[in-house]
Length: 338
Image (cartoon, rainbow, N blue to C red; front, side, top):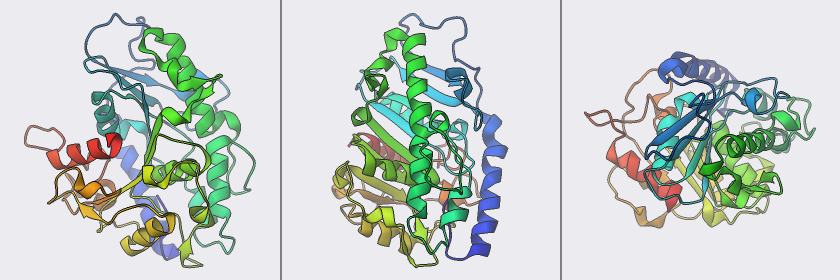
């Protein structure tokens, strides 16, 4: 989640959102390591799911140890690209499985990554007269370098450290699935990665796109807004390693957490191409815009439905048969694979 315009609203909504993963974390089943006792499965045509605690891949990981969710679908032709999804504040990969499975169904090696996603970044930065605070906090979460007194993330626990160790683990445990292609000299090859995230996670995806060359960055209901200064965080204006044409946004104008006006202003500050196009009454390729919106009604209305509708499993609109609604399935496909 992100900081709001006034502190009381932020505090209430931050606390409310923390209950979402608690309510729904048990909705998925799985065991640590996925197919236990069958580390490199026979080439059966199916969707493979692996549920892996971060500490299993690196015993130096000592916090935020809820499992990663990993998918590989052998029923489709592999794209040889990696999709990585970062949950929102206090969220878990277990409640964002529909979008990670969508990427797998499109041929991506797909990961829902657990990482340090507490609310400290917003408490420290949302009303700070130092507009570099957001960027310094995000850098520390990304690579574990000591950037801010507000948070405490070391290299092992960082996004980069966790993803590197997970890919090394997957490559060693399931060698025929070719996870090693996303490692270059033992480190993540970001150029083969579509990095996405919800809320706080989406902010990390866009921030990281400034620092390394990604295949694409996707932000779902994301913004770094300094309400004290009434402006985007300083890092938003920095030049980026990834072309801005590869950065996409998806949000509801009715989002209960972020001011839609401020979100659109920040997208302009970033230079993200296109205008807001609704998936509700337009079909892919949506005028080839990089900015999608929806006013669709969430599947459930408990706790910030319009903030969560775009990608959180329980909130995403469904068909009568329980599948992801076609408008959302098409929009996800456009964002991931366009």
